[in-house]
Every structure is written in C-alpha cells, then in structure tokens.
Length: 382
Ligand code: PLP
Image (cartoon, rainbow, N blue to C red; front, top):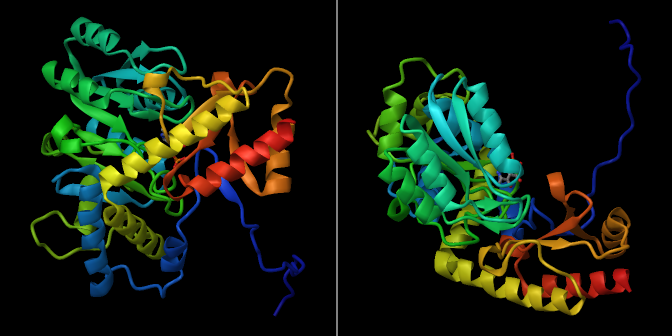
C-alpha cells in the first residue's frame, strides 16, 4: 500500500477553559444540558428518539406559546431559521416591509432580496426600537406588501421592539408577520398565538442556554397555507419545510420518513434546556431576566457606565453600554478573558469600538455572574 503523502498530525485532546459567557451569545450552557448531550447517540428514526422529538415539539410550543402544528427545530443555527422563513414563505416579486434597526434587520433585507422579492425598508436609529408609526406609514404606502418582517430583540444594539403592536399592524394591513426571536425566546415576554405571529425563529444558544446550532421555528396555519399555495418550489431543498415536516411529523400521525440525519445529541440538549425552562415557568424566567438586568444596571451605573438604549426599550438579556472615554476596548475584553475567564461582547456594526454588549441570557442571568462581572470590570477599569 502506498504511504500517505501527508504526515500524521500529533494533536492532543481539546480541553476548553471554563469561561463565564456574558456576551451576546452563546450563553453559558446549563450543566445538565451539557450532560444530556453526552448521552448515547440513537438512530434518528429510533422510536425512542422519535418519542423525544414529540416532547421537544410540545416544549417548543410552550416556549413559543403556540398551538402551531408546524413547530420544530431547524438542524442549523439561527441564521438558518431566518433563511427558512424567507425561502419558504416569500416568492419572487413579492413585497416585504423590512424593519431595520441593527445588524439583523439588515440581514433580513439581504434574505428578501436573495429570494428575488422586494424589500421596503423602515429604518430606525441603532439603539432605538422599530417605530410602529413608520411601519404603519410603510404599510399604507405599499398596499401590495405581503409580509412585515422585524427583529423582536436586536442583539446588535440591545433594543426591544413592540412585537405585539407590530404584528397587530401586520394583520390590520393583510400582511403575514415574520419575527426574529433569536435573542428574545425565554428571556422576555413572547406570545406567538396571542400576538398573531405568523412565522418565528429563534436560536438555541441565547436565553435557552442550550448548545449552539439549532433554530426553533414555528409557522401559523396562515403561513402554512401560504407555503402550500406557492407557485414555485422552495429553492432550498434542505430548508423546504414541506419536506422537513415529513420527518418532524405533520400532525396526521403518518410515519416519519428520513429527510436528513437529525443532530441527535444536540436535540437531547435542546430537550433538556426546554424542560428546564418549563420547570422554571416562562413568566418566572422572564421575571428573573428583568430582575438581574436591574441589578446589573445599578452596578454599571455606579461604575459610571451608560446604556445605549433608552430605559423603556432595553432588553434585560442584552445590555449594550458605551465604552468609557479613553478606554481601550479590545484590551479590556482580553484582560477580562485572560484574568477572569469572563467573556463580554464587542460592539457590532455602527457600535463597533463604541459599545460593549453584556449578556444576561438564560443560565447566565444569575446574581453570582453579575457580582463577578462588576468586580472584574471595576478592577480592569481602575
Ligand atoms: N438574529 C439575531 C437577532 C441574532 O442575535 C443572531 C445571532 O446572534 C442571529 C439572528 C443569527 O443566529 P446564529 O448566529 O445562530 O446563526
């Protein structure tokens, strides 16, 4: 047998350091979620595994507060959930009102245009929520619009938009709503059915404190109708939800069939993180995030640090704060990482170099983390 031409690499096992993750995500993963992921892998059509998927669906319906049958986890990160909404629901030539008040609203625009549809932008200043009056004006000016798309919790700025009011406007003007809940799910109030949300996606790695790489998604019956009435096939085979549902179950009780090999162990992790959320209770989890945010805010204000977002639009789980004048952004973050094993986030987009993003997401939204952060940041800035 001929010798391989590349030399055999000698690599040691990888042991990551134990960090405290207080950036924009991924957040600290619950220990029992990490343990769940290490359990024996099952076949993705094993009846025991399929039974667990049914529980994941139930738990997702609870987390989203929806009875939507099409509720599942896309086998890829939040960006895939975003793309799944646009490629399945929006057809070439259709008009979508896209609200843009940060990086992720801009990504929605790119998705709309890649689908071959027309994005009508409603821009708000970074750090501010989406303005419902401007959205209503855009809906009035574009009577042919079929969708309203916005980010509930803009991770790039820490601003929370009024999803309930925006979805009511979408309904009033005959549009379907597409909502990014990557950072909101589990951290702030979110009620899919009551607020009339038509398509929503999230991420496993934020307030669910699960491992990264999965995107919870839910489509209302009206969104499913729109999908079924398409004149053109969904251009992405992998993200085509009509095919994916044959694996996740379409409510008809039909036998599940292979679509792709599910990330089995990551789904064990999602099951455990959603189970923990249900055990705590949604309202209790929202209240915990709100209370921890207030403690963090008080401590940061004592250090003379100011928030980017006005008080009434602040996300408790994502605190964007201005870097004090004269302070070296990167040096502070790397000292926190090296000396305290503590990660905070850099500013993104127009806030790069101007702001830090301090996450209090899921398992990270705990008093001991806040104490560590305030102590460490106080020492580094002294
Ligand atoms: N949308 C928002 C609001 C986000 O914060 C993120 C990630 O930070 C995404 C979408 C994309 O998610 P992912 O990085 O998991 O692909």
